Image (cartoon, rainbow, N blue to C red; front, side):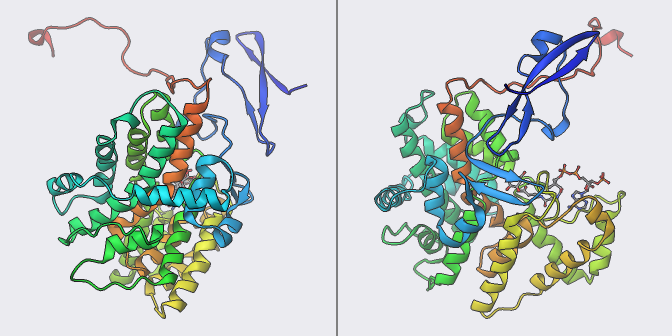
Length: 430
Ligand code: SDX
């Protein structure tokens, strides 16, 4: 017998069913609330609202759990690779060796984008923000495969579009970097793995010898794995909303890129590095930084801290913190920004303001430090996040499109504007 809740509205009693998830999460099903009571609910920022039922990723914010299709992020970070995780997220199961080989081949085949796409890059100023280019290019790349932009859904087209997007994401990112630096594009090398090939396209050209370091490949692969999905975050919810109108996968992902760009979301990794640089160069003390972050009159926030869901450690931050130490020791590098970040974390985590609000380091706090160490420029950090998040966006798009009961997202509102009034001709207005 499923649980029900009772509500009394205007003297009448109503019952609503409770939905329970496989991890015992509970939700009051209000699908028929307005029809039965004339009321809607109000929940600014959807902090208490479930927008869907999903089988992809589970997060427990209180205990710091993150699992992709049931597999703990700690195990995937240690034992898997980005393309294997991409297969898991977009297909629901870990691939056999043969399935993974075929998936890798397909992504590699579609990594080169249409040669005419170079003209699109030529149209951007070298100062264009990489996220603006990335979002524009996902729709542009779909223009060369109109059969993949139909509003109907079929699995074969989905699989081709998935491989094309994973491949094109790395190429567009690399070419964006080359465009900004006035360097010639380097074509994809099908003999290289996904991350090696990305680094090859990004950092090599006829004038530059770039040796692909396996440790750097491992660190970047880990960053992509850790960013691959994260339940109904802002950008993934955006992708689902666009998917619900039956828009194609490229258009949906392009919208996800735009949502991710914001500094409260995927843009935080860039903001973290800017903050660490500000502390390092301005002589601002850690204590001053923490004081500012607590000052309600300042719009200064400790970037990379806090999370809508995690009220305990973000497990990804823990993994990245350890990866930082490993990368720096292997590359035999020291980085004052890492020292500042660790001190900042130490001070914040003993401060009542952060403890009371359960503000812990999130995925963005350490990711930028590693990316900087492996040579990724700061303005490309959020692009790296987007490459990593691609499988999650694709998996969520598929879940919407394969759900026969899926309806278009169309939230309601509480209107607070002017009540009815008559038109006043311009010469009669005050
Ligand atoms: C990502 O949703 C996801 O899953 C996202 C993500 C993913 O993988 O997709 O995990 C990736 O986006 C991580 C978050 C990256 N953003 C940042 O690091 C930006 C800094 N963090 C904050 O802006 C904030 O913590 C958010 C946006 C992440 C969460 O904001 P919420 O849930 O809306 O919380 P809130 O703004 O209501 O804050 C609650 C309180 C407030 O103080 P009071 O009004 O109660 O006094 O905590 C304070 C806030 O002022 N607060 C902070 C703070 N974060 C929250 N104070 C100082 N510094 C901060 N970073």
